[in-house]
Image (cartoon, rainbow, N blue to C red):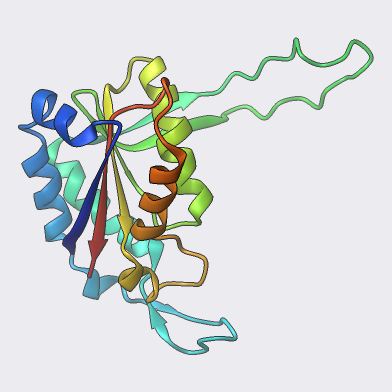
Length: 189
C-alpha cells in the first residue's frame, strides 16, 4: 500500500512527533508492506458492478494484522458492562448479552491504530467516540486512523467511505474539547 495523504486532527501530527515519533516509522512501514494485490479477492454481486473483482476489506484487515502483530502491536479489547439504572421502574430489560466489548485494532505504548474500510459512520465513530473512550480508560493518548482514499474506495464495495470525505467533514465539524489527537492516513493500492 502507499500513503497518499495525511490529515492532522486536533494536532495529531504534532502530538505524535512529540510523544510517539519512534512508532511512526513502524506504522508507515507496516502500511507500505501490505500487498494490496493479494487482497483483490472479492467478486462483486452488486447490480452496478456484477462480477467485478474488488478489494476485500476482510483480506485487507488480515494483511494489516499480519504486518502490525510481529512489531508488537496488539488488539485491545474492553468489556462493556451496560448500566440498568436508566430504565424506568416498570420496565424489565432483556438480559444483556455477556461478552459485549469495544476493541481497538492495534495498540502500542498508548498509541491506538484503527484500520477502517467500512461505512462513513464507522470512521466518525472511531475518531470522535471510540478513541475518546479509550483515552478516558487510559489505554491511549493519541490515535491513528488508516482509511482508503477515494481512488481505492472506488475499487471496493459501494458505501465504503474515504479519506477526502472524512477530512472535509472533520474540517467542517471542528474540534471539541473531548477530541483525541489523531493522524488520519489515506492509503491507496
